[in-house]
Figure (cartoon, rainbow, N blue to C red):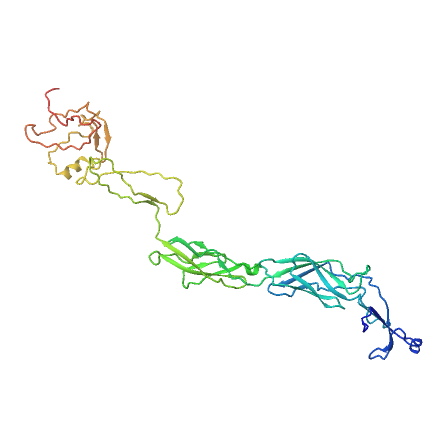
Length: 427
């Protein structure tokens, strides 16, 4: 209870019989409402003995774009100089020293202030002085003091409390939508394969809290596409793809943060389909035309090895060359002598001058040979040796016309004269 002229203190107590009969020199007699008790209002000089008291620590939450701070515990300053209300003696001391006149915040660039809501109870609130942005700063820490309305022992106006620490966290608002890291994505697959992962799309969110900054799901917007995307953005096919059916798929993909906010712009994903790949040599021909005397000829100038994107540790190549059929080229090693007789239309009386060595034909024994095919042999003559064909093997007289058929390859003798057949009287 305060005096009308703002005196520092007033006391209210029940009057005695002597006091009711005596004049009230100190102030004035009055009656308590409802009870009819006569009291005398007296001025008393009270000293500000105690400083206000605050909790040592406060924790608060404020939503960005808002100014109200929710504190735990509530901001209430207590002062022992406050009045003792409803005492049995009906004595109530009303003092300015027991009231809380203000709060002071300490710290650099603190965007908050503290306001007294009720001086008598010491209740106050903290509010932001400007628009807060969680993306710029997520929390603040500062100290605060409470001041009563009296004078301290030194006579200075206001008596401050000890400093309390205040921690305030800025609560996020889902302001931002997901944004994809790339403008578009592309990948290539081989038809007929089922992939666990073809390509990954990835979006980010600029909000500060885990709830709104994390991407919770992706979605393929393109209808009836044989693909699916998981919560981490990995895209895979749901069925084996066919190059003949579709060469390339164009997918539209979107993203959602954990606050269900969709990406502002969807992203395009292109997936190309390649025909089935078979590892092996490509770019070569199985037939090579060569004209004698034309010099060196590259057999496979455009050959390349298709690995189908698989790693290769080493490569070993063997090339085998063989001639075409007897009517189109020279393949002496391919056919037996009897087969050559049939192919060439030789007469029935044709005799073989160089037969494979046997008990009945032993004149070719000792000649160097090159193993041929179909049990026939190829004999080598180096210019220093010859064989004598036995008499009687050829029934045709040398005086009569005859034909000799020879399959041969020149050796390393240059253009020296080579004798195929001679008739001599020398032994």
